Amino acid sequence: MTILDGKKISNQIKDEIAIEVASMKERGEKVPHLAAVLVGTDGASLTYVGSKVRSCKRIGFESTLHHLPSETTEKELLQLVHQLNEDPNIDGYIVQLPLPKHIDEQEVLMAVHPDKDVDGFHPTNFGKMALDMETFISATPYGIMELLRRYKVDTEGKHAVIIGRSHIVGRPISILMSQKGKAANATVTLAHSRTKNIKELTLQADIIVSALGVPHFLKADMVKTGAVIIDVGITRVEDATKEKGYYITGDVDFEAVSKKASYITPVPGGVGPMTIAMLLKNTLLARERHRKNA
Ligand code: GUN
Image 1 (cartoon, rainbow, N blue to C red):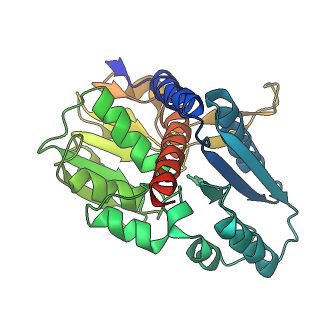
Image 2 (image 1 turned 30 degrees about the vertical axis):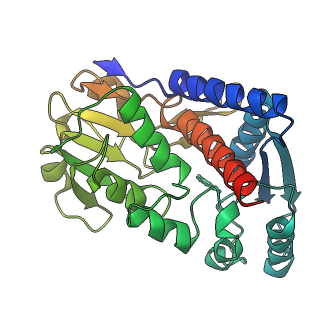
């Protein structure tokens, strides 16, 4: 069994980007600038955004965090989005999800200019991704693909079962894995909350991508020996014995499933760090495009 070490690979990718940034600086070029918009005080979102901003510093990007109160109106948020669209200093930005319930997420994501949409959530970019066109691919599915590529995991003609049909993970990864190319060419089944007999499907899977957010959902008796297991779940479970009052766990019963798997991602340290690395890669791409179009 091989651990798909997302922390290690994400550090490699960050080092590669840092080298690019250093040569941009040497050439006297502007370095990439990523902005992040966070509305409210959701603990997990604060952690993710903090980590994104810290990673920018480490690799030499500029970064700006817009932290708005929970009561921010949709109109106020849209004003900031328009301001970021217009700001020539900002190469790309993200609006951290989830947004408070009184804000229409779709309206906000549609307002992000596709050229600055480093999350790849705008319909233009999602559509381009689905049509094999070059674009910003959402960081989590992009990170999974990159992890599979760098470990040379054979996906060609394999049966991949994706669990979860979210717009930011399940749906896009199902498209990417079925496309032509490296870490792709798989036969994909997209399972979700209405799927019947999910165990019957997972037992046939050569590759399982679980993006449900239900701790320990995937048990050893649901997995074929030799399967590749990608755990996208990141759930905080309250635990008074921990310093932070919680621990982080994935969708997979790692202890038992890892004994049957050929490759498996840990949580934490698997897909999570890859998401951040790919967001940075998208921001680098945004800067290069803006420079060429300037
Ligand atoms: N919330 C969970 N994952 C993501 C992500 O990749 N981008 C943004 N903006 N919000 C998220």
